[in-house]
Length: 143
Image 1 (cartoon, helix red, strand yellow):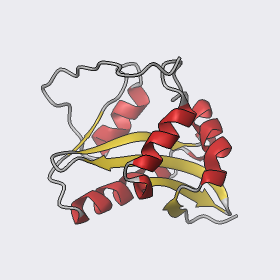
Image 2: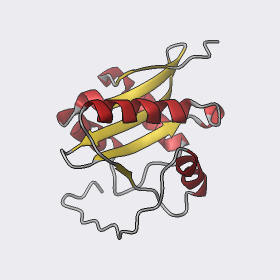
Image 3: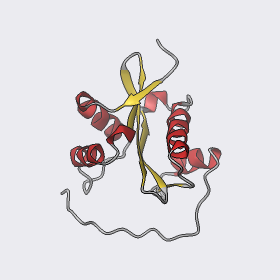
């Protein structure tokens, strides 16, 4: 088995595998249709939707965005059987590299406060809780 993860841009043929990965990582919520989320990403900085592969098997994903002010990360996922092997760290390093090259001064991300493992993961990478309140408003219903 390959031990070095290869990172490449998402391809349309990856859709069902990536959605299964997100389900296995408990990232899917009823109000976010994963197929619609993928389509939306492909229309905006689609090249920054990445997957990580071991022996041609998708084991990780990440969506990166930059609006000219802040960078964002969504859908960072590593298959449960490959977690704690450094693959999430590699995906985040690739995101940070792409954002730095684009002149991005700061990277933001949001987590559910119940996801304590992810909180610890990001803290180990040097991320800190910002003293802000996160607001959201659905402009389109996926349900």
